[in-house]
Image (cartoon, rainbow, N blue to C red; front, top):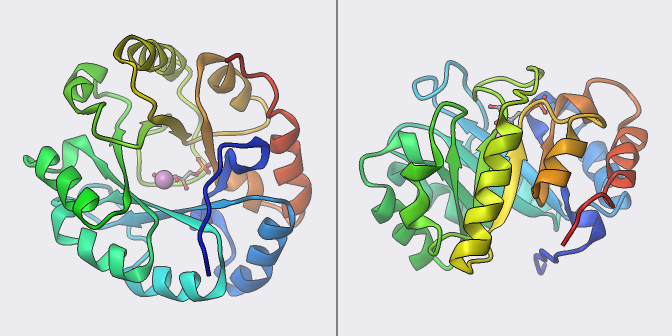
Length: 230
Ligand SMILES: O=C(CO)[C@@H](O)[C@H](O)COP(=O)(O)O
Ligand SMILES: [Co+2]
């Protein structure tokens, strides 16, 4: 199966399986695909970098067999360099590593690029943009965490809107074209300031999955996908 990732209207919403009912994941994948979604968010947690555990390479490989969706693996692990190869083999299309998680961030980015996978860097809310400025020309995506990582269902940190704005400005000034992704507390309300500030990809977990109307919730987010100024 060919994996696609177009810049387009429906690919901007990225459902996060962390809050989904894993007993229904097969059915939910079909609903997500039917809605025209093209990307899926897979949270990977090691119980050390964040106080929780989440998805394995094996789970990712099983998903990869069942769907053509573009798989964005968000590694919330210390020393992500140990996990990159496993998630590459599992079928990740984009591997995002936290700048706070390793003393060798440049090396990990090169490791992902050498595997011919898309690469992202993520920043915790408390980490400033200056820590990644020098890396911006190397990456396909920057993930601004809009909650402290570890759990779904937390409240959006509104101060992060200014960070998105500042990152968009850095992108313009540097002539680079990485995508800006936001993750944490995204709802039909909080998505709006993020979109207006310049975010391109919107991860949403509990807003989509903490109810039985997954399709309706995805559509609510997709309908807002027109506020963006270019
Ligand atoms: O990385 C994370 C949490 O650390 C996320 O991807 C969550 O899955 C987002 O969940 P909601 O905040 O949308 O419920
Ligand atoms: Co995530």
